[in-house]
Image 1 (cartoon, rainbow, N blue to C red):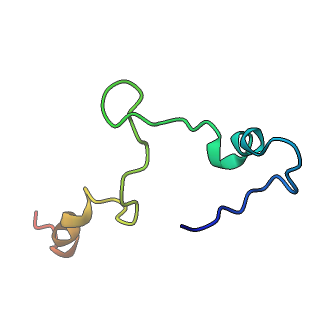
Image 2 (image 1 turned 180 degrees about the vertical axis):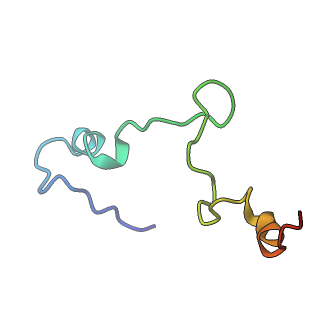
Length: 66
């Protein structure tokens, strides 16, 4: 088992209480996967930008004939 490097300096009196106030046991806000408050503005893979217009390259190449 690995030893946890706490960020409390030297613990003198109460080791359990010192670890409870360590960042390891801080409160974290869980994001909902579904339902209220689950909307994520950025997609899972933000690398692909403007995906709706990606198939319109053929339209820009063809000249308009009127």
